[in-house]
Length: 418
Image 1 (cartoon, rainbow, N blue to C red):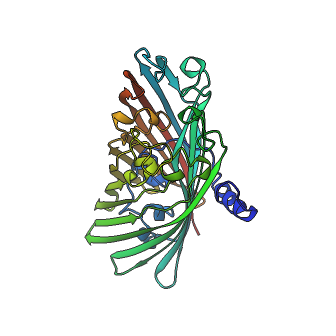
Image 2: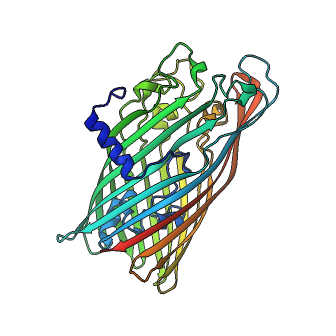
Image 3: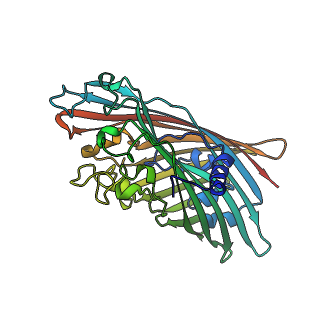
């Protein structure tokens, strides 16, 4: 379906991306999931499952919406990832690289998020959120590898973008507990260049322009205050089935499959006093359940086969700890830290030159200031220090390939009750 899109569907697709001011995105930081959804959550390194911050709450746990006032929240994130690969050791055969370091271009990206919540007379709440994952993006120059390009076919790279439009409903089941559910429309697009050498006889592996894929999913959540000042929450989203990338059906395993992986989490929020809250989340992302992402790179099957090579990503468990403090009336300060073991095995560094999602630690801070017009201005800043993963070049085992990246995130937001 992806090679020819009816005009009505094409208009709908561009509407979702256009409504989000959707730019080209780069690698996110929990694999290819965003560190956080919403500027306040980002200021606490993503803590949110038991702590609904604002109208983007449904992107984290739809059960939290019902505890919010009627409001809207919008933010823009400036995402700055610096990524490169390096090759050590002289080549000993046709599969070797020339030694050296190659940096990816396109290091500045703008990522929008929006949410609105409408409390209902029946005690429930309806919300709409628009957000995106960081996706995958690399852009290596044509003069890499001695002028042949990274994989011998000139300028090389991939670009994956994912946007999600959610309509959510939550309601209280008691004075202290709530449930919620979201219906999610997902839209993604992908392009690749410089990969012809992987299969010169294929016309569905590289340089085929932008391909589109869409699908629907759900997210379910619960939240409850189990003791005075202590709230727990849980959220679950099964794997979202997406249409295949037909133009790249001989690049991704299982004929271009690129579903959104199953993910879930639990969280705690504790208020030791009226001015502060401590939050802790544990999030699980099951990348191994998506063949194109989880299949190992070493495979006896060709690219595009259900058992064919993938990125070899492990599942990720991410831990997030955050603190919020009301420093004075109208000013809240935030800080947080997040850790998750990066998903790339040393045996899979070759294919992951295209997607070096190696980040593990993230350190965050932020604030919200009430303004004279009754709105609120928020800011969050995240730093992820350099992480490197090394492994042998399977095409020339005498060589070592090193993948490295460090990142900065700056998000600015405005909120208003109405």
